Image (cartoon, rainbow, N blue to C red; front, side):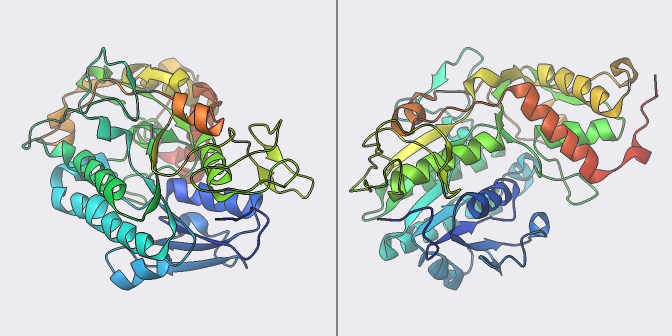
Length: 395
């Protein structure tokens, strides 16, 4: 490949571009490059400001249609973000979750292997399985995975994602990179139940909804599980570091391009910035191998228990709303089965090793937890504008 960020003839296919991560990636591609975007999703309500953009083409469809899969694979770079990734659906819709997270990505991978496209496939940190409270760093190419019993349908998502990874890695002729997100957060995340979605969203949107409605934050099994939360802006920066290394874009003097499974960068290239023409550039390590690799993408410095997260969000919400935190309901503990349904199980800690991304791409997440949470919650409050439903008392 010899592609550049300033090459206006290049089109990137973003599958799931109307979702949380996809909407941020699409904006970044339009702002940081001169590429065109072929966006595929089932809805585009997050992208109203982009629907008529001259460099975008949108298709309302999903990967269940073989013709759609074939069309997507004709572009040189394919980013697959499409997935059912709502915890409550793992419990009651296991078969559909498996189809979404294995059958459809496998078909796309086969099409990309035939066409020669580079597939950047989004997996999940859940492929590391049922971790214990004292689990150490999760290392991409070393850590073993142990899952819950078959009766625990909670693991339908994780096992489907893991099988998709194994299929992608074993597919002859496929140029691939797997991304394992660790709890990305930011504006546009998930939905508000009863407003623009049904069921139980992920924890940040879940807590944000409860705060807006003046309801106690529910701590599943006491909120003892720990997670590392990562700003979606760091996630997008990771992707550009990956693109930089894999696509052979111009850096520094502009004389070096990709050859084989890596990218050479000019001496002194930094982590991020823009060139004189305003085109974004992210400096990767020399000869960084990015193909046939899985990368953790997370912020190891942003670890917090779910109970601690609840208290942080109460404090931030009180600041955003201008109320006293003591006026907000205290969190309440609830069992996992009571909250999510029979078959619920959990991982107690997910701490990513971030050494590989730093070594091969020169990337490290930078945005602190409190900054990411305040941006996310502030957006949620403004977007849903439900002051009338909040029963918090003014100080």
